[in-house]
Image (tube, rainbow, N blue to C red):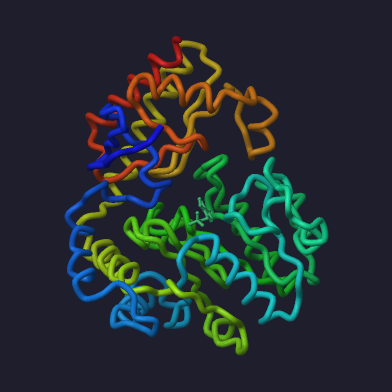
Length: 375
Ligand SMILES: Cc1ncc(COP(=O)(O)O)c(C=O)c1O
């Protein structure tokens, strides 16, 4: 499908068909497409879009992150242009700070298309096998992983909520990871590219009350413009001789967009977490009631506004369970059925609700899923 335009929670394709968008720029567009806040970006376009050297918005974004989001972190973040790049920089920084090379990551996680994160990906050609030796894949939501977090590792990277099995019952597991990392002198990196400013104003870290050593952001922070950011404890952020630059890093458009987004989150103007959480809760409750009463092998799972449908009636603890119980093509086949009902779900099967998803729109999605499940 080719998209021609987008407005609020709708996309219009090149055939002139309007669909409800459940993807919202892979979670980046939390307010809604074509929203009044981000339209202000034109003010920055008129002042130039790239200056090569730092611009006036950077210090405002830094102080907003310091004062309202992560007061315990250093007051300067590293900015770049995507989530992938933020994670690349975070693991480089972790290696530089600790003098160690091995990075632990979890099965079912996604941290972008960096070579070392692609071992289990079906499209991993071109990645030298030697790279995989620098990464250790750990079982997710399974205490067996704890013994595998060893002092020879530089860092462990984890999404507070994984897109492949979004869940809210994960605080205890995350807490154990935090404790084990501290015990073994291994840095804990929270990849909050998807969860940052979405699960709460302080992301998954705020929701679960766990402080990592480093954090990465992207998506929502840029309000629809390309962005990545790395923040962390002062001693780590001050590590010398680590390379970070890039032509578009901290460009004035993305930084102005980030300033507008952060102000809106702090002042509770365009982003309201009650609205986002209610949308997710209604989606899961109503669909699970239907799936159970109709004996469907389907369930709605999620955390706040991050949701997905799984095609099994069994409880899953991680992506491994999902792969075990769910027919391999189920997500794609169902996305196609919903597309025929004018609901756009991305191939990865994630439903990202935004401020523009009103109760009526959520209800429309729910009813379409019910119809789709009968076909
Ligand atoms: C948790 C997580 N980390 C990293 C990334 C990569 O971000 P980007 O696509 O901006 O490079 C994504 C993107 O989907 C993500 O969800």
